[in-house]
Image 1 (cartoon, rainbow, N blue to C red):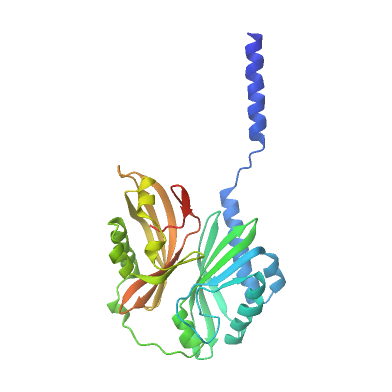
Image 2: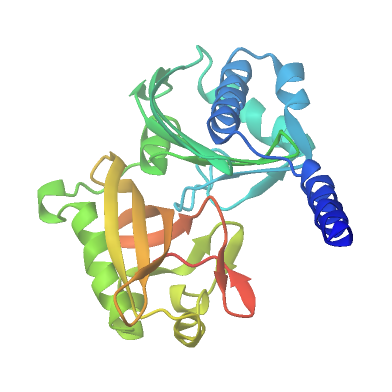
Length: 303
């Protein structure tokens, strides 16, 4: 009996030693720290406190402006170009100062955050070279080793083109193009039906997702891979329009994946960038705070 007690206490000791090194994350604290770091990065950037900005950036930092117009006048408003830590300050940020010589005031109206990333939604107040420039912004941040690893800036690149570069637009009546949230629901219907033909009709080519450029949306995922992981269909949890000026929109889309029994086995969030083409919404790109596993590989997939 004594040997049994000795064995039990020995196992308990080993168990306690094993788990004494486990680090538990205070989710609320980590989330708040991420929000503070992201907000400070924007504030310091606008205040020209560039040393503080650089000190908060990871060495592998990348920045991408997520517009989709072919702006040939300058780097600001031209989407899909990736800037590293050095060329962000040498090639990109000085141009913003030239376009907005009197600066800009950004007011934070909402934040969406977790331990993986932060989305900061802001309203701008500035004067561009072509008049009042009151754009709306969404900044997406990801972190690595408590430093800012990736930043993606979303705003109306069409407003950038008209107010900062004097480009001209053909007028489109926003009443005729519908609610972008309804478009997302239409897209989900095609996705659940695995209708690649209609999916490609309402998505752009090329299609951008996170840091990847695809020839078309259907190149970014594989239905067989989804089904091998138990997927049967996806459903909407919540949809929010972060901004919509009638020409471009940014949507926050929370969704769930369900198995054949109808049970949800995964919940996630994606940010969709939409623009108007030929009087209807088109899906141009998306971003997820975290990758979603797909069978034997990991791919960024969105519904």
